[in-house]
Structures are given as structure tokens and as C-alpha cells.
Image (tube, rainbow, N blue to C red):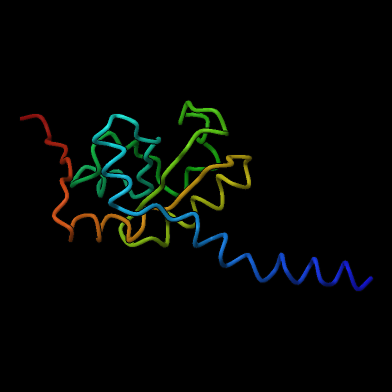
Length: 130
């Protein structure tokens, strides 16, 4: 019984560390994108927010649609996936949803879109047809 309590305690203490380890730095993602080895990047903001500016190559899947439309990502559940939103709250919800659906390598973009933009990194804007 003592061994079980000790094991459970270690697991519970490591949970915050596991969540922290799932963040991907903006520098690391930019380097992978530049070397054409980018993971699947998913923008979980609204389509309107996505259209105003998103990371190059990112797919838009609003956070409220992740559970119903995750198959549209078109990647195996073992693929590297990085999710982001404006500040990180919706991305964390999307990560949790994807993990509950069996995706095993889901990371958050550290600082999300706000920090990416603040770094002066490029965003792609969708331009409506005239």
C-alpha cells in the first residue's frame, strides 16, 4: 500500500512538469518551419481571427469543433501537432481534447499567436476577393 501511495504521489507531482514539457518554443517551431520539417500546426481561433493573420501553413480548426472534426486534420494520432490561439487558453483546451481522443504528441506553442507576433515573426493574412 505504501508503494502505491508513493507511486501515485510521484505521478501527481509530475503532472505540472508534463504539461510544461509539452510547450514548444517559438524559436524551435520557427526553425522546424524553416527546415521544412514542421509539425502539423493548428490554429484553434475563429475563422475570422485566422483570416486576419495566422502562422504560415497552419490549419484552422476552431476549438469548439476539435472533437467533432479532428479527423479533418488528416494525420495519424502519433504525429507531431502544435496548437495555438491568441493567448493560449483555447489552445490548452484543444490540446486536452486531442489528447483525450488519442493524439499522443500534441504541444502548445509557447506564448501562442500574441507572442509570435510580438517577436516580429511573420503572419499570413487572408485577403478577400475583390
